[in-house]
Length: 203
Image: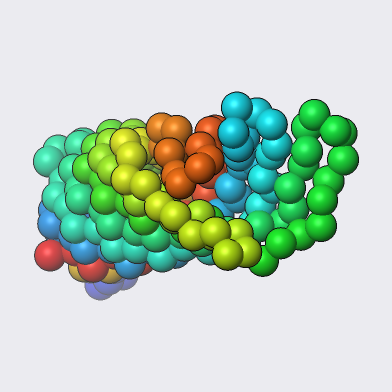
């Protein structure tokens, strides 16, 4: 191998290492997120388990602003999700009544904290949760009522940084609230299993 070839190989290696190093730069610590959710609301017990509300899968949107400190992320998230009513099971009678027009909307404001574990360049695994409040609005026919209650979530997934400024999260979250007291009825077991996709701008 002559000297010229060696110099060319060293230059190529240096270029490769420099590009890899540039790619592996830690993403900027502060971020804002645009969130989309596929929501699967659980069946909700109504009026001391007399009957149960079945819901269709739905959708949700939201946003968050946060910061990363070493391996920890802290953020404030505001989001909403909506699920249409699929039917009502009369547990005591063992039958289901006809579907009635209506839906359940959950608006949340949460303070979240996550542990972020690097896996590879730009890729990390996150896990954590959040606490805060929710406004649960329940509509069925002419009935429309809401209640503000405590809410929490558990979440885990993968985070990827395309560049130090742009990234995305894909994960799962379990969102739940305490029992909801509405006019004349109470809702129990209000929880939702959600698939979450978020686009991030980091600065």
